[in-house]
Length: 118
Image 1 (tube, rainbow, N blue to C red):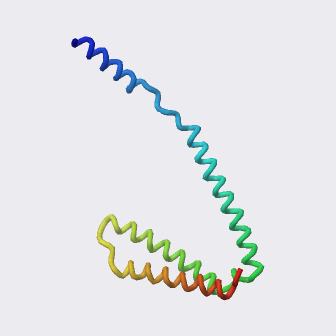
Image 2: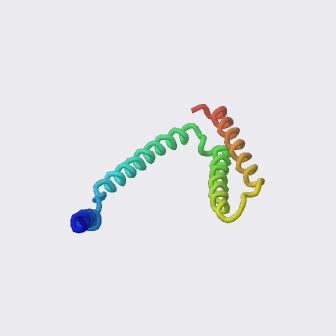
Image 3: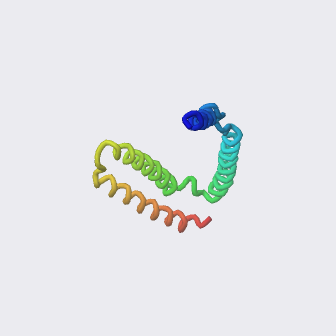
């Protein structure tokens, strides 16, 4: 009995220890190719939208630049909240600032759509 159970455990050990890890190189290339394809598609769409905006004059509008600046500030603020979340509690004024920026962005978006109906 002892030899039989020992033989089974040796076989199981050989199957788990000596087994080749799954080769995911092909899948990694596929995911990388899909990611770069998606980036390429987004770049071409962004160029088309930029060309449309240049014709209408929206890129020279102060509302456009203020909305872009607010998006950058919102991104920095959210990353800062995520950073300090690990060390301490988040102050309430940061949440209020985040909500205020989101509301301001919604109003700016509406104003841009009203001013430049593209």
